[in-house]
Image (cartoon, rainbow, N blue to C red):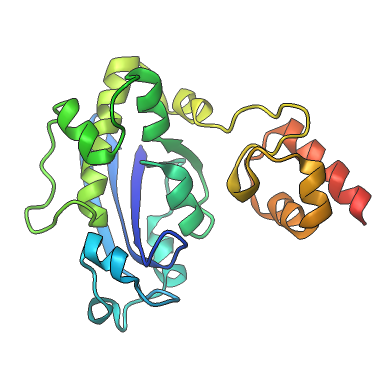
Length: 222
């Protein structure tokens, strides 16, 4: 089972206003779930214009910490541009697969937005009629259809896809993801050692060479 998950937010910096998921089992899209979420900040006008979720719609709804438990239970979580959804959500107990990363490997030279891929690949999918693009459950259906096409085209299984979506191996002491991506670990340790400690304590799926490098720099800072 693969759980496709999507979030809508107050803006690019966070604040979840909606979370949804569907499961892909034996090539079928099943078990849709969605929740409106009371965010920890105001919804920006720009974000509201995209997903059309208003402050009134989320008033009195659960927080993301209260709602996220029912979305647990899969060994793998799938999202389109997974680094964004992963950053928006509390820690999820499973590996992540990014359909955007995989699509770039399979179909170079095209546009990789969710809806662009839906049309260019002629994906056979019927999202809920009452929703629209940029609502979380609607986008989950499109991502799930894309995931199915990726597996049909490539023959990759879940573990292979998860491995292909891992950050690039560490080159020297270059940090491979997040807000300091591409910067040397040494420079990060000098200006923001707390961030490296946070990564060590909270990111569970670090590759061993990166974990070892981080421990070296965090230890030298103490």
